[in-house]
Image (cartoon, rainbow, N blue to C red; front, top):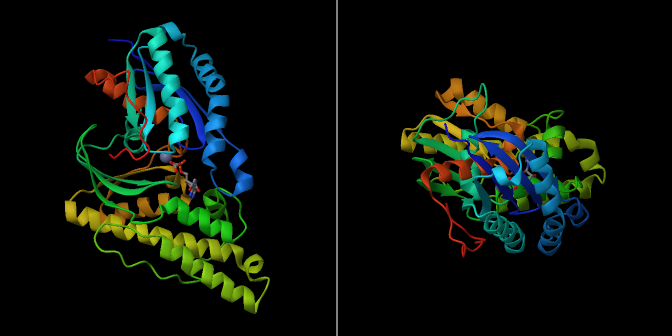
Length: 338
Ligand code: KG4
Ligand code: ZN
């Protein structure tokens, strides 16, 4: 058996991440989350690129040290080519190119959204991999897609958001409630203490498998404004129930579309990926789908849901096996499609 060591770099948004993988198994998975954006209530692209530039060498160094792997052992360097913030992508792309060039080893470009899906193929004990073809729902701060996954490299996007991503729906609602950024994890936590049926928000009417979340954000805004007019302490007094109700509505929207996608494609194997798949309510709703709709579901380990480089490494590993290397003049692409 060949010994394949992949060093992967992820820098598409506000996390600088590096991972080392040996034959599909994660040896190290380091994520440095940029704190600077919290005070702005969202990612500031210019600050993100600067922080990537500052963090990238220490993060890569830490990943190699933790893995106990020497640079000379590496088989290839994988990096996130897109989609993402251009300034952020450029840092990881340039660094990966230089390192591969310096070491004289292959460079492998990775699509971030494919990586969220293929994270399910990381070699882990006790984790089953979905069989092709299967359905994947990628839910993150930047994307909301339903993808028919035919093979490692062939995927069809069969539904996606026409406006905001689901993570934005969490983050923007949370901002209205004064929960800081990113608000997804906070809403998740508070929702556990509240009643999801307290407040009703109408679901958007979008045909087919597409999503829309901008109307929901506006509905929540108006609802809160109205309630606060009548009772200035409305948010503080009802925070858990508000969070539970918002989360319940969002989960309903996602599960409705998954049901439709499963019906239309006849596929029952369903995987989720992306930062929002860390959400406890969504994980539970998906598991409930097993006995409700006969689904077989695949939920990634928590550390492979939000942005990380282990998922970039597994795609790097799979492409390495295929000899699918990048050219040295490959360019970062902020709107890269699946
Ligand atoms: O995949 P990710 O780390 O970055 C992007 O590629 O966007 O996703 C980040 C998003 C944020 O919107 C964050 O609020 C959301 O994932 N998120 C959650 C949870 N953990 C992270 N949303 C709901 N519940 C969570 N537990
Ligand atoms: Zn992501």
